Structures are given as C-alpha cells and as structure tokens.
Amino acid sequence: MLQKTSHFMKQANLINGEWVQADSGQTIDVINPATGLTIGTVPKSGAAETRRAIAAAEEAFLSFRKTSALERANLLRKLHDAIMDNQEALAQLLTMEQGKSLTEARGEVGSSAAYVLWFAEEARRAYGDVIPSPWADRRVLVTKEPVGVIAAITPWNFPSSMLSRKLGPALAAGCTSVVKPASQTPYSGLAWGALCEEVGFPKGVVNIVTGSAAAIGDEICANPTVRKLTFTGSTEVGKMLTGKAASTVKKVSMELGGNAPFLVFDDADLDRAVQGAIAAKFRNSGQTCVCTNRFFVQAGVYDAFVEKFTEAAAALKVGPGQEEGVQQGPLIDTKAVEKVEEFIEDAVAKGGKITTGGKRHELGGSFFQPTVISDANMQMKFTKEEIFGPLAPVFKFETEEEAVALANSTEFGLACYFYTGDLGRAFRVMEGLKYGMVGVNEGVITTPEAPFGGVKESGLGREGGYQGMDDYLDTKYVCIGGL
Ligand code: ADP
Image (cartoon, rainbow, N blue to C red; front, side):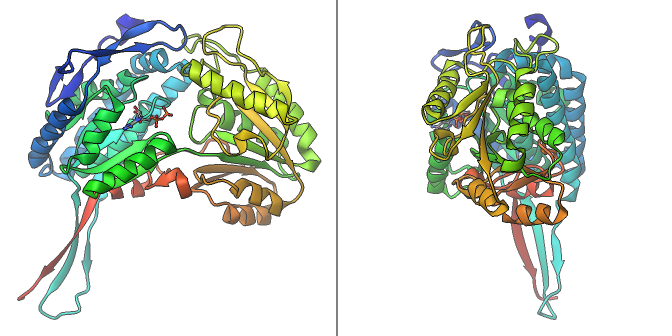
C-alpha cells in the first residue's frame, strides 16, 4: 500500500516551495493505529522553521493578493479535480495514519474536495458595498481584502477535511498560509502541499510545518505577521491559543469540543432515530466533535429505543479500516482507549448498565467494542466531558422542558440532534437548544454549503457556507471626497 500512496506521502516540511527537514534533523514517528507499526517520520520542527514559513507566506502574499478572484477560483477548481483524481490514494493514506474505515476515508476526501469547490465558487462573490452617501460631494465604498498571512492548526480526527475548510476560504480570499497538522496524522496535511504545488499555486502560498505543537503554536501566536489563526481541536488548547493570539490581536476561528445531545421524543420515528443515532455516535469510532455524547430518550419509547439501538450497535463490524465492509476502525491510540474505559467504569459504579460492548475488542491494540450504556444519570462523568470514543450513554426523560434543559446543561454548544414527528415541538425544541447546529430528524448534517460552528465554549467563527469566507477577509471603508 505504501507504493500506492508514496507520491503524496511527504516526510518533510514545505517551506517556500522546498521540501525540507527540521533544522535539528530530528523527526517524529508516525504510527498506523490499526497495526501499531511505524509508517514513516516527519520533521520535528520548532520556532525557527515556523518563522521561515511565515516569512515565505509574507513574501508570497505580496503577489498572491493581487491575483484576480477568477484566477484563484480556477486554481481551486484544479485543486478540487486533483483531489478527486487521487481520491483513492488519499483515502488509503488517511486510513493508514488515522485508522478510520476506507469508506469513511473516501467520504472525507470527497468532502475535502467539495469544500474546495464551494470556496472556488465563493471566491468570486466576496462582494463589497456602495452605500448611499450622506454627503453630496462624497462617495462611500466598502471593499473586502484578504487578511494576509493566516495560520491553520488542525487535529488528527479529520486531517484532510478540517484543512479544506481553512485552506479553501484562505486561498479563495487571497491569503497565504502556514499549516501545522497534528503529529499523529501529518501525511494527509502534507499531501495538500503536494497537491497545491501540482496544480500551480505559487511557492510560499501554502507552507506546512510539522513538529512541536507548543513551539510552532507559540511562534504563530507571537508573530505579528500572522493576521489570523484558525484552529480545530480541544477546548483546552483552543482557550490557550485564543489567549496567546491576543498578544498580537489576531482574528481567531476556534472549532472546539462538543457535548452533543441527541433527543428522542415519544412521537419520533424510532427506526429513523436509531439509524441517525448510529451515524451520529459511531462515525469515526466516536471521534468527532459533533458525535453524540449524550442520548436523552423519552420514557414512553426508552426501552424500545435501547433495545433497537443496542442491536444496531452490536452489529457494527469492527476491524482494520483497510478491510472492505469494516464500519469501525481502531481508536487513535491507547490513551483514547483508557479514557473510554474510565468513562465506563465510572458509569457502571454509578448504576449504568452495559447493554452491549464495554470492553477492548478481541483484535487488541486500540480497537474497542461499540458500547451502549442504559440507565445513565447526571452524576456520571460523560455528562460534563467529551467521550471521543464508541460509547453511547442513554438517559431517560419525562417532559419536553426537562429534555431541553438537560441538553443545554453544558458549557459546550456545537451540534445537537433531536427526533420528533410533531411540527410544533420541532420548532419549540429547535429554538430552545443553545447550539450552533441542530439536526432535526437527521444525525449527520455537515455540508460545505452550511455554516459549521459552535456557540459558548465550543468556539468562535463559522466554517463553510458563505459565512466561511468572512474570517479571511478584512472590511475596508473608503470615503471618496471632493467630487
Ligand atoms: P486532541 O485532544 O484532539 O488531540 P489537541 O487540541 O491536543 O486535540 O490538538 C489539536 C491540534 O492542536 C494538533 O495539531 C495539536 O498538535 C495542536 N496543539 C496541541 N497543543 C498545542 C499547543 N500548545 N500549541 C499549539 N498547538 C497545539
């Protein structure tokens, strides 16, 4: 398989169009989570390499900012085509470093391409305004300009598509970039460098640096040339970066943790709800920020839901992502497995009942059984913390008001889902939920056309939609006098 993916598997930083190693020559091993074996290495870079990448992006910005929207749209269209032409090789690479099933990896690569195409189209619609002037001899214009050099820090759970939502709008707007992919899954990020070179983005427009998160992150935050930081990852790191970026007053976009509730009312189509529940919980082995963390089911359908959901979860095929038909790959590492075990132990001690799963999978390594826990209560740890694994706690509720209050009783506010057949309830509940995204009778809702993002401590800014361009553009007011 290395043969197939080797063209994109870059084991170097991309700085100013050159593939280079860390100054120290040090590297980080990249592990295949399905086998525990080393796939290859990437440079262990720090502040100095990051500074050079930022300088290269600054230099490239001088000319890239002057390209027309049409030129940038055409480059992005070519990038879209290159991703789709290589979908299989990119999916193989993604599965190898991340562990997700090939079906999901193909989907992620397809989604990356879709974001790029969306922003290719949006590039040509970064409209300004001509405002009716209050003065007879002056005119009032508002234009949109690229913010300049942006930095993107991305996580390991969607190493390709999370970058597409950041590089897509950045390049569409005319910004240049420095990217730091997660050390667990750097190759999908580095592949973007190879693809951008191939389709003709000028050198320095996309720079990619791998290595010490703290050293690279600190340089990005402190460097005044970087005008925007876009981050997807944990709330803990996001808060820290938001604080550090304040020292140079950068724009920030933060896609942070979630604690998604999934409400099932007595009047719901139960089979549809179970199908949505499986997708909303077990996608990417539960390792997405929009994965359901808490299921709340109304008393009248509670037992029936638990039974059907348990049956569907138990039927999921666990195995190495490369194997056709596999629905759930390994978790990213053993630390993630231990965290899931802790949640289960805590829940069982507090009265939770395991209806399926509950243990490490017989395949060993970081494989884990899809797990459902019934009789969950608000004393259990997962009411407050993100599980990020294949564990589904199911709580019981009586009334609509109670369900909405329970769903909102968290500092997070990213995605939420609910199932009902009643139109009035659909509106009441939708309006009552304090979340950035709501799925009504739908468990998977992400699409490039819609703004993705959270409220409260789940983050700042939106990715995708026409809104996704905003953070990469500065608004300039121009007053023309003496007419
Ligand atoms: P997760 O818990 O999902 O691994 P993290 O927030 O730790 O999420 O990681 C998301 C991204 O943030 C990764 O690219 C990681 O390397 C990076 N990161 C982690 N710590 C820091 C830091 N101190 N400064 C900058 N980036 C960081």
